[in-house]
Amino acid sequence: MPDLETLSFLVLGLLAWYWFAGIQARDTAMQAARRACEDEGLLLLDDTVSQTGLSPARDDEGRLRLRRSYEFEYSDTGDNRRRGSLVLFGGQVLLVNVGLRVVPPAPDQRMLH
Image (cartoon, rainbow, N blue to C red):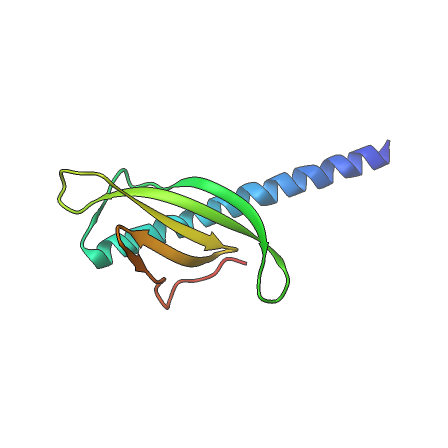
């Protein structure tokens, strides 16, 4: 029975880690979307991002990381809705796409560990 309890705690710990890492990644994505919209003079609509993809990938050092894709909506005139997207790799913003222009992440963008 102790093996089942240990396994249960391990599974609960992994679920808690995944949930917490997801919240941190979403916060990072929101900050990146806000910053990109502000830099381009756009209005971030609904003040939210939605996750559209999740996949494992290896970084340059061979470590396994999660690649998360998000979408958000913005307006350039206030009367329309356009779709933007961004990609996080681990906790680092890889790219932010607003319209036809891809905005690189700001140099002070912090990584999650």
